Amino acid sequence: MNRREKFGVSDISDKDFVLATDLDGTFLGGSDEQRKSLYSWIETNRSRVGLIFVTGRDPGFIHDLTRKMGVPRPDFVIADVGTTIATMDRNHIVSPIPELEEEIAVAWGDAGSKAQFALTGAAGLRLQSTLFRYRLSYDMDPALFDEAAVDTIAELGLDTIVSDNRFFDVLPKGVSKGPSLLRLLTHLGIDNRRVLVAGDTMNDLTMLKMGLPAVAVGGSEPALIDEVEDLEHVYAAQAEGAAGIAEAILHHNLFTAD
Image (tube, rainbow, N blue to C red; front, side, top):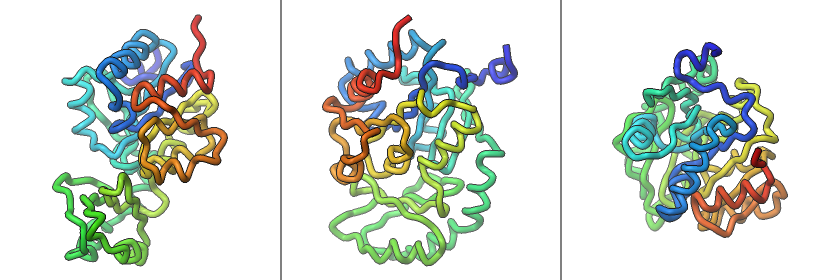
């Protein structure tokens, strides 16, 4: 037993297949039966299958989701739109990995208060109540939203992502799901060819464009489909959510039975 396994943290570097998936609309999407089928397959094959959540959700949500709602526990978590990179142990505790988050923390600095002040009164934006360490998130009304908010944040040296035409995130420069996932995979020594990346909205774009085998599940945000339709490594699934992930595993031939 290696050190990670001793403390309840999986070592997935040698597993045959790793699923790196968004949650809402993707891993949590589809019918009850479709989710049950995928989740059961993962649990049956945990000795060969690694699981990474790559989500805009916060660690508290993921803890409750996996501990209380029957969703498979991931080996690692990239949360908060890429600003949290963490392990998850057998007690469902999410623990950030300091050496992987150091650059994120430096890039963010004290930007939260500056960005919040700069966006005070911005049309079509309502600050979410959840407190995040290295990001700000707003609910967005597309009918009222003023694109000038994007320029305002860019002037502060920060990035923005609009997803599902209703969420507006402020992030450290150069930080998002894709770069954070790549940082984690490199840290773990995982062969990228054994990874399937799955998503459905624009905040998944940076990880779908990394060149790894990928899937935009059925029902994905049209803007995302427009961005990835010419990328050969990205499969556009017909089925939604969990069923779309299963469809893509077969399409990319990423797992073979013993």
